[in-house]
Length: 231
Image (cartoon, rainbow, N blue to C red; front, side, top):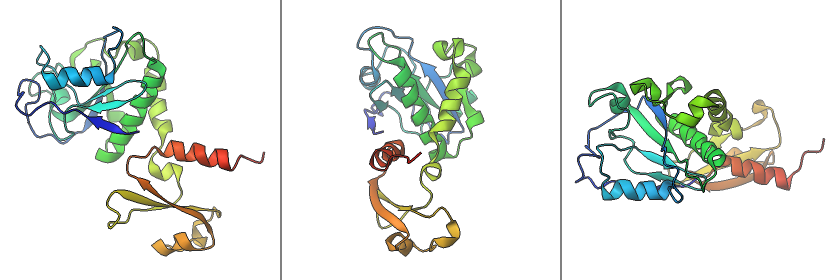
């Protein structure tokens, strides 16, 4: 999925303090805003214009989009555990929209994708994907806590990393914004040339250049549609 940005201006220190952070946790929230139209973009606009609370978060997710409000390497005030608390100082915040005119199930799916993306990007273990409740005791994320937290964690696991979805990938530094992916017919690694050139060999069905951030689940679906299972 594409991650859109509407960053809080650096001048709004109450919500974007500008404190450097190396994320160790990912904290899952729900917006608790059921109003119609209270989607991810609306919350991103709210943050960028300066909300009336000293509260902020990194990402908002709905059934259609992901919006980022604070860079990953900066603190946001979301955990409710104080200015020096681990939740605020060492975790990325994902808010899942619950607006009544949205699709919460799809929003959860997108949040799971984002959580896995951030896990891979920052080398964060699945055990460190936690509820807001962990830091402050607040009943948040309310819906997931009431019914579905374990399923959500399993959903994150099922997203899979890049290596789970394609069997070989070479990241070429001179293709700064692209990944070269070779899809091969053989399932035996010993039959594959370890050099980048193997992608042009006869045992590779095709070579694709994909923009970074491309959802590889979509690639998998496209290939399944093109080459349906025979059994």
